[in-house]
Amino acid sequence: MTSSSSSSSSASSASLSFVPRLVIAAPSSGSGKTTVATGLMAAFAARGLAVSPHKVGPDYIDPGYHALATGRVGRNLDAYMCGAELIGPLFLHGARGCDLAVVEGVMGLYDGASGEGELASTAQVAKLLRAPVVLVVDASSQARSVAALVHGFVSWDPEVRVGGVILNKVASDRHEEMLREALESVGVPVMGVLRRVPQVGVPSRHLGLVPVGERRGEALAAVAAMAAQVSAGCDLGALAGLARSAGALDCG
Figure 1: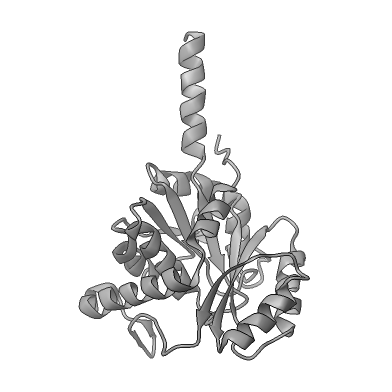
Figure 2: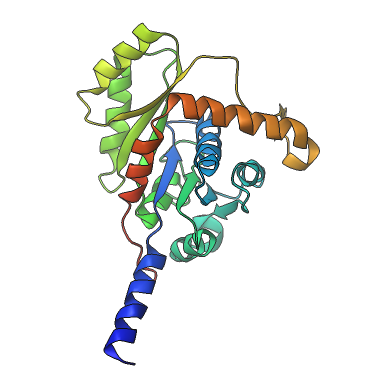
C-alpha cells in the first residue's frame, strides 16, 4: 500500500469513527426522555439532517417512534444482551452515513441491570460511546433544588460528561428564571426549556406504550407534536454543537 492510499484509508477510518452524537438521559423514568429524544430526532431530520436513532436497552416500542421521526430503523444498544465490547461497533454500523445520532437512555442515568452495578445503564453506554449527555429534568416541583439535583448527577461519575440540561414542565417565565439562576452555579448550560402543557406523548395503555403499528395515525401526530415542542423550546444549534464535541470511537 502506498503512502497516499494509507493516508486515505486512515482518513476514511477516522471519519467512520466520528459521528456527532448525544445521549438523552434523565434522573428517573417519567422525566420526559422520550418526548425530548423523539422530538430532537424529528426536529433535526426536518432540517435536512440524516439522523441515526438509538435506544439504550431491549425496548422495542420506542425505536418504532424513533423510526417515524427519522425515516431510519431505530436500533437498540443493550450492553447486557450483546456485551459492552459490541456497543461501539453496533452504533457505528447503525449510524453509518448519518450526520448526527441521538441515543435515548433508559430509566435514570445511572440505573443498570439489577445487582450488576453500571452494566446496561445509560451512563455505561454514554461512556462506551464517548458521547455527551443531555439531562432532561422534570422541574415541575422544584426551584433552587434543581441545582443540587443536577450537581449530583454531574459529579457522581467523572467519566460521564453531562454537557447540557433540558428543563421540562416549567410553569412560567418566573419559574424558568429561578431555575436558570440556580443552575448557573453548577456550570452546565441550559439547552432547552419545555413548558408545562397538556401532555405530549405517545399513545399508551396499562402495560406501556402502544406499538406504532397499532396506532400509526396517532403515533405520527404524537411525533409531530413532540418535534414542534422541542423545536420551540430547545436550542438546536447548541445541541448540535454539543453532539460534535463527542470523542472519536476506537473500535479496533
